[in-house]
Length: 393
Image 1 (tube, rainbow, N blue to C red):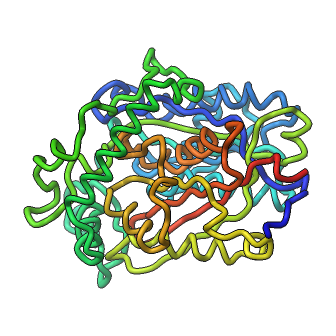
Image 2 (image 1 turned 30 degrees about the horizontal axis):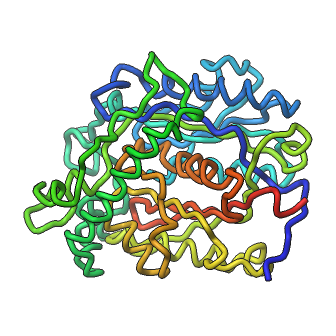
């Protein structure tokens, strides 16, 4: 029996918005990370004005931007005023979910009443980076910082996805079948207008770039492996490198209810870490830890109670490994498509998971509980559990 939560001070997320997701080098290629983020923050701040609380902070995730404090710069560019602070976090492709996690922790602790949280990535304008000639690494350009130090495995995510598929016996055929489903469901959702209400138009771009019809399993099977001839990850069953930004307002259940805003309670979160050689295996342990939290296990909530699951579809093998590890019902996972069909703007994708959950959960027939999870370079996993407000106070 699941016990009802009745806590007006519980953190909630509301008013989520995002840019369209642009394939790197295409629709949003000329827009830098602040140019992507500021319009989204401005829109969420305007909507959050209904709560009647000042914005206490802005927390944004970002992986490969120009450095510096993108959250503070974006808050100023959004017109939030010089009194609104900001902080930027980097948990690689879990950054956008971690930003919301941190905002929820502050609200739960009473250290803030209203935080704008999210993430952003402009792969198109990410600066080139170089190790200095006298540095500890080989001089020259590098495309990412290390996920682990010398002496530990540090594979690129594509190579790690191939290794995960091999270790778990996840076939190319199964990956292509899952990817075909993701492409088809993304197209269906786009055509049905599911994404329209959450998209803030930036430079006249209002629709996601990547969704393409006709990406059948047969067509996907013709694509070559992307990360080595023996691998099974391809351009079709993996995410697209993308540009985009997303944000939500995080406040208390009492404040959101008083303002009449649709919202979702943030029940619990968990972060775990494991083998850096297999980062795609990390979400399942994070979900297990989350389910053992006192606020979850103590209320009698189990996986059987969760009716919507969103996992960052960086690679089909990653999602399928989580489904296998937890014996999840595949029909509950990414039912409106995911990063395989939409694209993966690294720093924003964790927040986009929450927008997908809100889209599913806030419908009249939506599920009571929803789960978001990310696999992160270096072997980390991140998970968050959400609850519909009409199950409690």
